[in-house]
Length: 415
Image (tube, rainbow, N blue to C red):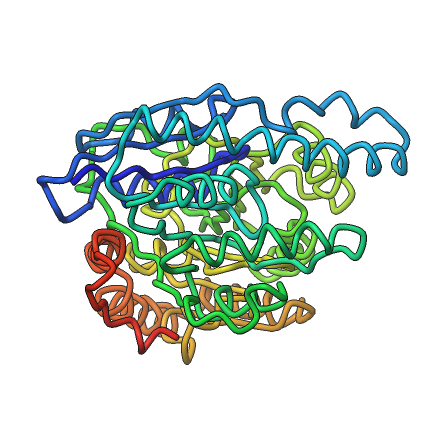
């Protein structure tokens, strides 16, 4: 069976990890996989390099509205918004015939759409409609990875119609957590859909250690006796960098030699914003703001604690699961889908998004109390093995995508 995985992305990050893992651990060796993505995605080359399973990668050249309209960022805010709304739906209509031609050329038997959120990538929504426009095709599976957002009143008429077409065109609408899946019900056309469900993310676990490689400590000149607190994620404001840095300043008062390593993709202005916070809080000597170059497995091998400080729409928190697979305790804010990963705090601690003291105190406790650290390390690893392996995740997606119209795939427990 030939299966196409279609995505649109403008950030290097967790969505790339998901797509890479899904392809590499796809359980049906006889399937022919094709990844279709916009050529403007800065992480596409990295995804292609990390694929260990045969997969054709197609970088399409369909002009995207957010790429073409980058020049509009220099315009006054009101004028930019007016132009972006008009151009957005002009582009959306243009996607439909281009995607039909693309799907006819590639000729897959099944289609899995991987969307960064909802509505998020408009080519993802257009792909569901374009695919369903051809008779005889099994409906696509629409997967989205961040909490859905409300429709703005001035776009309601057309957004409701697009959503209705996506819902009717999709076999299932699947997210990464119950919280994320249910968020799509804020969209009127999806509010009562019986197609909505979720499949928890999984991770492949740590690779075999490589004693010959240079350590992160050596690369960043971190002393061997200094504990490392690690954050992996983009530099988007919703990731809560200010919250984390203020908490870290408190942690450093109790553990003076601690270092914080932040690693992820970010636009220049986003990174500059976080650099400003570091300067303001006087943390330059112990905070390392790094790009996407650090291998997440290598960083987690050397980290004492992994943190997720998100202050907005965290659909799942894949970093939490990755840390658990490395037996590293985690401290997380309680938002979106993270409580599902952190159930009963087996692998660390979770606090409310406004609880700066609790966030800092829990990091300090893990750094200073070996018994607590070991308890959370063991508990997190058990939870990873039971619920969050990559094999389980890939098998569930494969079963859903490969199923025919008359097949029954049991996802009742996930609704």
